[in-house]
Length: 484
Image (cartoon, one colour):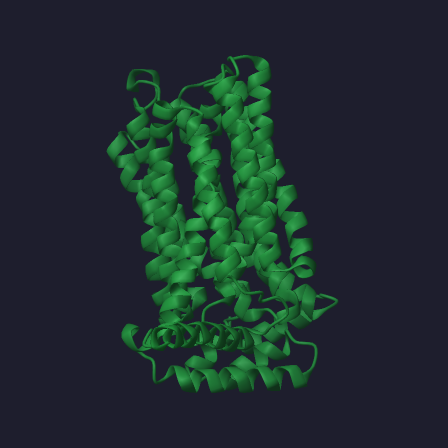
């Protein structure tokens, strides 16, 4: 969509405010996040049916191949996130999101028709490339369009759509299992993800290009026209264009990967981004999102009942994310993250105690479910939204695509490790697995308290200056200590 078409679209849409137009743009872009959420959540409902023998309509999965099927998408996500960041810097966010939409569609069709475990693993890997690409591109795209006062809530809309997609996956899985009563139902569950893929591809024709990307390509007038439709005053537009142009002039001297990361503070910042990916994944959140039915079945609950109970995961996640979107503009990034991690540790200790020290019973099933729901409430309210927001804010403009791609790519590798080892660990260690997660998360609290600054209310350029000063100051302190 050209800048002139975009201005005409904004004028004709009847939107009462420029903030409202930003929300509409974010809603369209986050169709990629909706597809991301559905494709990661649907495996939870599909796995119990895929574990049936081939003669019964399944794929004959074992605990090992369950982990392989679940983690194949996530390893694909690592590749998608890494390469999408580079591609979006070169060709633009819109082009990359259209490519991801097509890959979402192909992956959905391929996985729904898979005749064997290995075809399923291959198609889920391809689908994961789309999931990872969307996960790294959508928050950055929204952040580059949003003003500082709107950025927190708008980027968190991506997290809302992720958990909404997961919730839809749980609801559709339970509904299809009840209505169809067929072991082949998992194929229909997987095929539904065609819908958000189509919505993403169509919607990308109705959103503007990132002004920051346009300036990087020398198209300053187009960038100014787009910002004029999104900012409250021409003064804001002129100031922002000035900052972007200055930043892009600096970028031209940092073209290669080595030159983009040629300063020690940038390496430290990249390590913080990677560390945050470890923090969010080793909360164990995706162990719950993928394997809650299996956890509940281990307490004696039936398959269909476990699928229905899993809907609670999705509903709690959506409600919590909505509250988190409201809180993030008031409470700040850092305190929200520390609060969420503290409650996550307590919930994991509770869950480990219930599963380890209570006999199998309906009471144990409900207590385990309540522990999972408390965990997810604080995870999705305080940790998930903050992570994706920080990934869109922390990195400097000249290396944002590269550093975001690397960080989110490794985030997906951490996700895959958790998804792969969790069913194996649960079968070996039982409820002790949750105590291990609690120990890891205590270390995560220490890391965040020591390394994470507050970015609330700052422009992207101000955040860059803050991080450079902060990390260079630490380097100077370290050098002074060595000299002394």
